[in-house]
Amino acid sequence: MKVSLPKGTKDILSEEMRKYRYIENVFSEVCQNYGYGEINTPVFEYTELFQRGVGETTDVVQKEMYTFNDKGNRSLTLRPEGTAGVVRSYILNGMNSLPQPIKLFYMGKMYRYENVQKGRYREFTQIGVEAIGSLIPEIDVETISLLNTFFNKLNINDLQIRINSIGCKECRPKYNEILKDYYRNYLDDLCDDCKIRFEKNPLRLIDCKQHQCMAISKNAPYLLDNLCDECTDDFNKVKEGLDNLGIRYIVDKTIVRGLDYYTKTVFEFISENVGTQATICGGGRYDQLVEMLGGKPTPGIGFAMGVERLMMEIEARGVMLIEPKFPVLSMVTLGEAAYKFSSRIIDELRKEDIFVDIDVMGRGLKAQMKYADKMKSKYVIVLGDEEIKTNKCRIKIMESGQEKEISVDSIVNRIKENKI
Ligand code: HAM
Image (cartoon, rainbow, N blue to C red; front, top):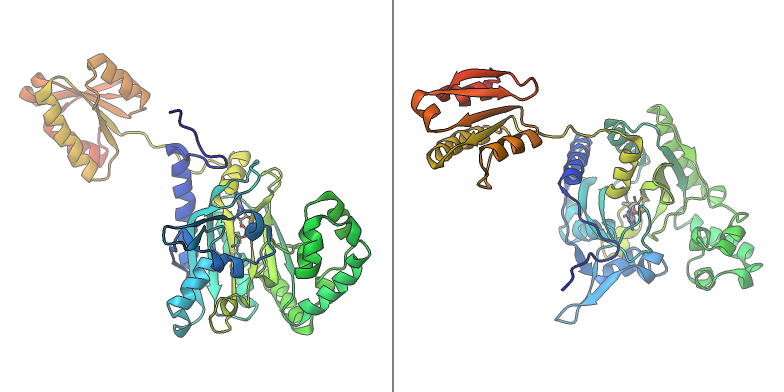
């Protein structure tokens, strides 16, 4: 059998994995400082959750879901995104009876059957937040500010923040009619999907990536110009709040987002480095989602970021996230007794959280030395029966090549206290 990797997936190897962990740690720290607790929901959910939550007419639901029947003939879907699962959990765990808002962050794998290209995978990692329960625009500002703080911590200070408002259940239906009036003149020129969108979900027309439809949507009326008073007020407050915190943004009337649950504020963080997939992060309000999924009417807002895209951004900028880790000490041993003795030293140092190394390949003296050099160990100690007997050994400082004689029983303390 010849093994291969499923299309759109990738292995994340050790070096990259350390960067992922670093990103996750920074994200977790920032989220906790903004009052968020972590949540971990299942990787698969009942298909209906996404059909209803994300929306029947979205590309995600229509074309991209990994859906299968389990042995009990239940239709399950690998989660294409995190919000629907978090909201499901909010409802089922009765979180509405706790003090609001409920602020949750998550990290995990998501699955979409997409056309694979740079920055677009079929299995990818998202980190995201959801703040459920607050209706006021101050939470929108806080959510965008959290993201901004996170990027600043990674030394990424120049992403474009684009914001828009896509209205509420008051102004959206009126706008849909205005939009349909506009598109009606071009019905024959629309792609097949858009012909369906025209009937079922006109806002999606704006989001179509087919050339002929993009040309038509260019001159379509914007929702931002047709908001009701409440949505206009709220959007103004979001802008004022961002100004107040000195966060720069662009109002982009074309943002409608690809999922159906959004209302009012939507936003994206855009980079020029990720190629065609410039959106590193996207989010917005979803004031009807809790109710749509069977909960009490409760507003919410959140965002999610593709970690793979973030990594590409970091690579493109050449920002070094973390220093590589090298052993402080490699013990080179001669014979079984010396190995046993040294392994106790190594064990003690590892319990003190010090990165130390000892050969586990049965290499000879020369090969052990060579390996220690390759591993970029700071110090190397060679230990044989003689050294143990006389309680004297030599420690080599690899950078300078200098050697020093020390007593064997001082090794642990010297390494611990970094006194060579
Ligand atoms: P989304 O815009 O579909 O929103 O995805 C958010 C981010 O996930 C994107 O900006 C991108 O970085 C990453 N992403 C999406 N698809 C892929 C893919 N195929 N390969 C690699 N990265 C990808 C959501 O998922 C919403 N749940 C965000 C949200 C949370 N809104 C409110 N709360």
